[in-house]
Length: 333
Image (cartoon, rainbow, N blue to C red; front, side, top):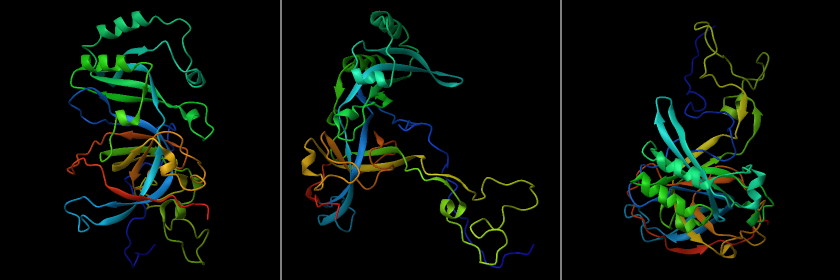
């Protein structure tokens, strides 16, 4: 076995886990360290599609400052989110574990498609148990569900997720959570235009693929033995094993991915102002509140996306962009 005469970079990136997502609704591994008045640190939306807008560039260090700029934007439909439970976590040597649970007695009928409601539930007893463990609790989360049946996508079963309640004091956060139990939360209650958010979603699945499509390796010459669309060498004699860094075939797509610091260009309630003629392809008309994010968002259309307060600090001042034009031209030719 001879030496190679030409050096080449390593194919593909080792910084991503290429495994199928465990669930369709992403679960963040971390939340923002928040100090202030109690508030929810995230919101669930449904990806509708993309369009483009023209706005005035307001970044002071940009060479295009105060000039008209075109940018691609993603529309996410955000029907009201319902809070139906609270959950407190405590720190243990084995990580975060549930310390106390509380749920409301009045729930939406559609929630029974996803979660079984207990036949007998003593709210007062469970609330007293929750309050008795306030000192142990280090993190509060609201258990919420979406309302996809308010959209035109034809989905009836709601998605369930946990959203952290940001607070300086657990007691204040608990009282805030109690005030939200059984109520709807709007996107305007959590975010405002000009802010930055992290988007978490599950990417489009592409099934079982070979190393050429999955990792972008070079196709071998036509006289190669065995195969052309495979790796030329899967490793040396020693160590006598196939290393994990070798580009191999396997699952491609349907991975949980996070995009950091996406700017909110607009938050609106009338979807007819931004929906292209004939509706978004493979989605339709936006009937509820919506949010426009600058750039792309992981995942196909109709997939649930989690919007989270940014965990990486942003120095740009929160200021609503001045949008001059949003394209509503038909995307169907």
